[in-house]
Each structure stands twice: as structure tokens, then as C-alpha cells.
Image (cartoon, rainbow, N blue to C red; front, side, top):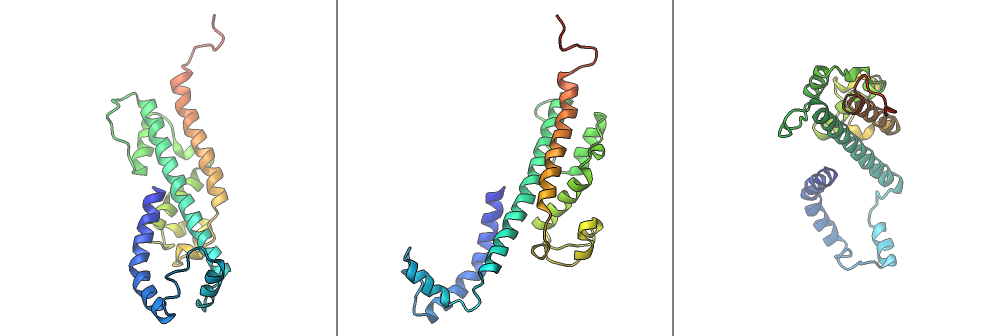
Amino acid sequence: MFHRFAMFTHTQSNEVITPAFEKFNEHYNYLFNDMGDDVEKISTARLAFRNYDAVAQLRQVECIANESLVINLWATIEQFSNRCLAMMSRESSTKQASHKWDSIEREFEKLEVSLKNAISYSVIDELRVLNNKIKHSYLVDEKLGEFEFFKSHINKRIDLVPLRVFDYVLAAHSFVCYITNRSGASEFYPENEEDDEE
């Protein structure tokens, strides 16, 4: 999933950057054609970028890393949820996994497990909505603004918001533990059976 996201972003950016770079390179007498790993040539070439800013570059890298983490955490939540459902339901193994969260929640409810009872549920719900916004609109809209953290960021681009990724990591770990413990209890520890039975 990360690879697809990176390649999509690269392809989209390349359509804009390539023609601009060709003009830029021509203006500087094709300085960028034969740089290779020559440190002096690379340093000289950087001087051509009037707006080169290491801080801004690091900030951009941070944004890409944080957004990728959000996407991958949400993929993990979906995968573990579907795996636990498959184990708990004992239905045909051909049943397709769902990527619709409301459908996943309903399936857990049928098995008498409420995902909303997880301590980390509110943060996981925020992570879910943020994941969708990163992949689709790239904007803090009214839906994402319903979460306390994003209320003051409505109408901002996602890369202008400092994401609370540490909270998302902790919440994802807690949530995966919650659903695996609930599914494990029904699978491995049936009522009226003792661990030390002889």
C-alpha cells in the first residue's frame, strides 16, 4: 500500500516537474546532466535553487512519513479486524474481507463485541477519517473538524497540520490488542474449561 501511494504521488508530481526541470536545466547550460555523485558539483548545483531551504525540505519529508504512517496504521487496523472476524465467525473461509468500517463494526456487534468499548476507539475513529482525507481530499473538512484536535484546522491542507502520530501509534496498538483479546477469548478459552485440567 505504501509503495502504491508513493508511486502515485511520484507519477503525479513528475507530470508537473519534468517540463519545468527541462527548462530550468537548459537555463543553467545543462548543469544537472552529469552530476553523478560528485559532491562539489552537487553543492554548486544547489546554489542554482534560490529557494533551497533545508528546513522546508525536512518538513516535507516529515509530512510524507507521517501521512504514510497514518495510512499504514489504518491498513493494519482493517487487516487485523477482518482476520479476527474470520476467526470468530467460523463462517466459510471464502467470505470476502470488508474495507467498509461500518460493516466491520456491525459484524463485531453480531458477535457481541462492541468496538466502541475499546479505550482507544475515539482516536482510532479519528485515524480512520484522517486516513480517508489524506487519500482523497487532502483537506481538513467539516467531517475531520468534528474531532477536537482538528477543530482549529478546518480548511487547511493536511500537510499544514502537525499530526499527532505518536497518539495514533499507541491507539492502534491498544485497539489491535482489544480486538485480538476479544476474538481469542471466544476461540481459545471457552467457558467452563480449566487451564489446569488433568
